[in-house]
Length: 168
Image (tube, rainbow, N blue to C red; front, side):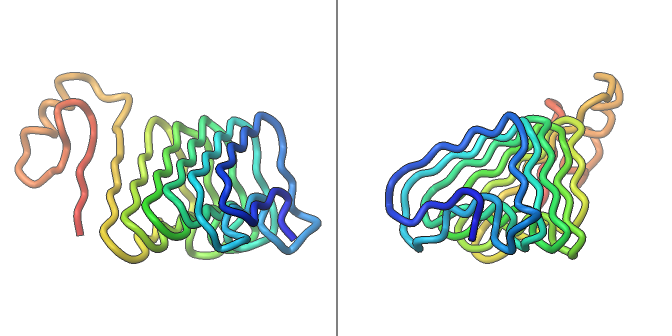
């Protein structure tokens, strides 16, 4: 079973500032999809979430929000993060999201948004899944002159504020 699981339609907030260790179980560390019912859920991670399951952090059926503040999410399988169904938002501000399998983040079903900011490290594929998804990358550490130069190049997708637009 999962370390933290929800199996009804309630709303849940998970705040991790330490360690959620699911290396002794074959289930996800956090499974908000267990009951197959909705609810608006939120996960805030500043610590470490680790385990051996695929879909280590699984969001449920609902418009969920997952914020990773310099936290670490590591699985020895595929899919460190699975956004599940509906329209979810995954935002990371630095930290490490890693999967031994090919997919680190699976946006799965729904019109999802993934925001990658700062010095985040994503080890594995970001899979857009189904429907229409949005990926926002924020570039840091560039001088204003270099940023303006990049933004001025046709087709670069770089905005003057340092954000990056990608499509396809």
